[in-house]
Amino acid sequence: MAALHDAPLRALIFDVDGTLAETERDGHRVAFNRAFAELGLDWHWDEATYGRLLEVTGGKERMLHYWRGIDPAAADAAGAAALVAELHRRKTRHYVDLVDAAAVALRPGVRRLLAQAREAGLRLAIATTTTPDNVHALLRAALGEAAEGWFDCIGAGDIVPRKKPDPGIYLWVLDQLGLPPGQCLAFEDSPAGLRAAQGAGLRTVVTPGVYTADQPFDSAWALLDSLGEPGQPARGRVAARAWSGVVDAQALQAWAAQEAVARP
Ligand code: XBP
Ligand code: MG
Image (cartoon, rainbow, N blue to C red; front, side, top):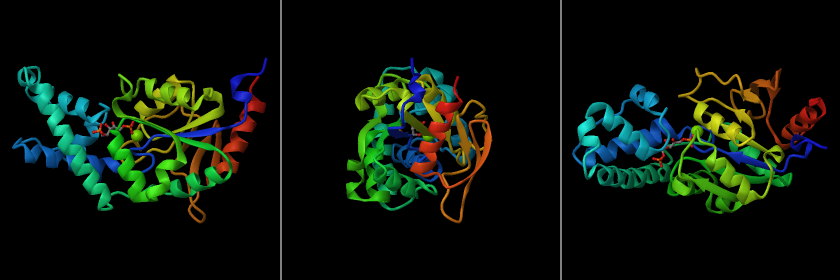
């Protein structure tokens, strides 16, 4: 019987924050701090603090975790969830404003790979922990009004009950696509994202970013410093082999095919 991984590559599933763009440090973090100031809180997340807090995925979950760390009684009191929800509404508005003002740029190779994958007939999808409004804003600002239509499926935020590293968002996207994981590749930047994708049975290309460069990704199927651009090749490994080049649809198809041959 043919294994699922023997099937041809049909779709690419992208994480957003850290993978499509370095949104966390200059986007989400700044937006959280603006929301805190707006509601008169003396909370301020500097870059290092925010890096530690990224272990908790989801903005509402991250705020509650921080609050519990500094004032557990208040964080568990009546009304705490409402305050977190209000902060998050405001934070989302600030984030969208920042993205609209071009505060974050796509990572190298992202625009090119999305375009080439579409030309090659690969389907595109998104699996992210962030709020849908944030995804819409980033796609619109970075890729133009039509970009949302390039994706067959956008799985985002609270559409599943548990956030990454739970595999739920990837399982939801696979279900929407109607494809088995062996016909798809995931693109991630973080340990939580990698665990989520692998938990859904997906081979995963990890391109660590500013906050995740020092983290272990030994179990990643491919580990590259970026997706690469002509004249600015990506470096890293694919499966167990060193690799350098530009990640395009042809390269991805070839990797997937080679692996199918290599599998017992
Ligand atoms: C992204 C997140 C998100 C963002 C903030 O993780 O954890 O919570 O930091 O967005 P991933 P929200 O890249 O693994 O999807 O405030 O909208 O949650
Ligand atoms: Mg990410």
